[in-house]
Image (cartoon, rainbow, N blue to C red):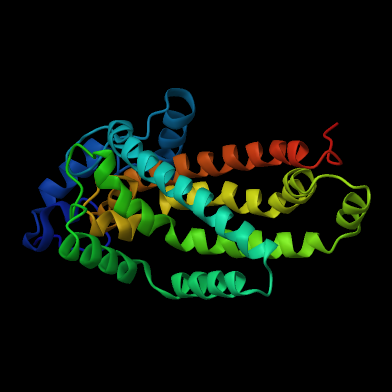
Length: 285
């Protein structure tokens, strides 16, 4: 009799070949999977809380913290480039469209962002590869193990493209709405310079919803790069998530999700604190 699986991470080590019951039982005992589920849960949670230990991978007995330590710097670099891309170009396009609402520039930007939103990530990656690798020979088709900055630009554009469109549209809508507000008419009537009216009064109030989106998008960029990292062969969090799911590496997957949740919580806290800087009316007791 042999174990064949789906669903059992130990039997998954042997694939379709299976293994003897004695071998399966020995591995399960070594990993503690033969204990009661509550005992397994307690051991895992206590290891995280008291020792920051997420256990070991089933397949190669490698500590999960070591695996995360290798994957996260790569994804952080990719997410930082994608975030900078969507921040600079998204906010820039949104400002142009908002200040020229209803004009040609506004309509062009709205159509452009609509096209970006409508294109799936894998299609956008294919287009960028064909244009900038096949046609122009400006980029490398995949990212090497050294993860050079020049190699990360193309996947960063793909990863941040969708968010760029949302940031541009959100900035445009917020600015167009605030342009019609009473405080803007008051600032103009007081004879304030146009640069001060736009840069101080309009921008600070218009950026509040944009900052909210950007803050939550940091975690999304780090955890949602599965397709992008797979297409460009990047050894980061996205690729590790996909690999953990296919190999049933539950401990690795839980460790990834835990760290991503912490990233979400920290960025949300920073965004809440930043509200008081953008809007002086907001104060924390």
